Image (tube, rainbow, N blue to C red; front, side, top):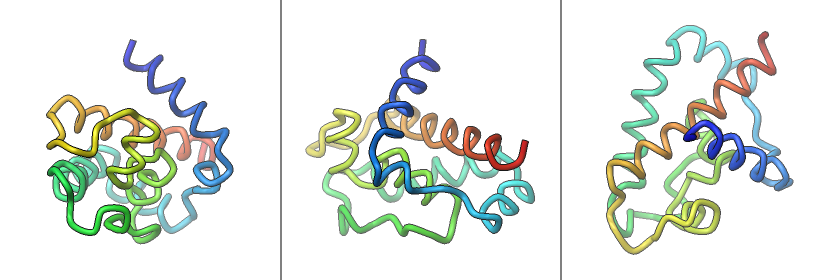
Length: 123
């Protein structure tokens, strides 16, 4: 069930010219290959916890760089980069701390996008 929801959300996001403009470049793909998906998932969990999980995060709307790490790119591609985008695209309220389930959902969609992007570029 979760896979179907994520698949539908990724399809919806792909219709946005802005969201679909994000792609991994060779540098990010090499980083994924070097570190592996388990490590990248740990990074995603850490970024979500430190940048998004609290109510009213510092610099909301500007807290996620657009380059420098595959997860950052995935966060923009999946509209999980700030609380405003989470609210607009995923209906996750801006006005509360994220639950563990919400944080897991965000990490899951980030990782699903990264895997899809990796497969399209490398396989």
